[in-house]
Length: 158
Image 1 (tube, rainbow, N blue to C red):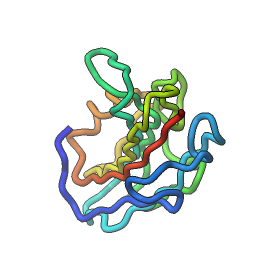
Image 2: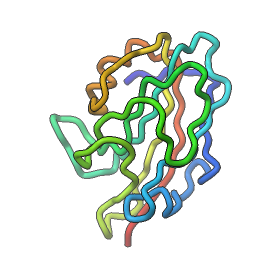
Image 3: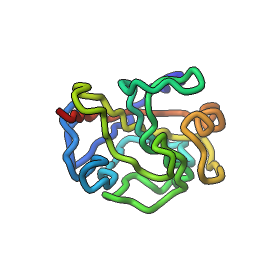
Image 4: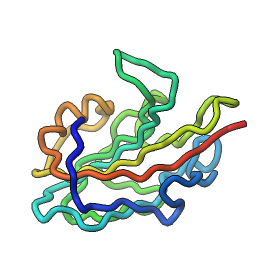
């Protein structure tokens, strides 16, 4: 996925960029999606999507690496924040084999994993069906990405 440079910034009140993700937002905790907010989106944004991906996961599936924890799309242009445990937008499939948010859960003793929460600004409103995998979603959305940014969190199970 090419990086679409922009001034858009993604933050969370739950953790700072590069910091540990609280237990409240991990699979073996309360498994609630963290609150997210973005500022300085492009004026031409017509919709948004949010994904969470762990590139450190040892999973390689269909020649693609990492683990998709969250695929959320069809967010309207008026959206600039998601509250904790949000129930908006259309949910895609995660690599746990279900849909919606599946929080961080690296293998025990595997060390800290890096979880990238991405916000994607799109040049048009997409009306994609629910249940798309990360890669199915990106195939359809990538031509419409006009800006993006990420928030990095870490988590480990000793």
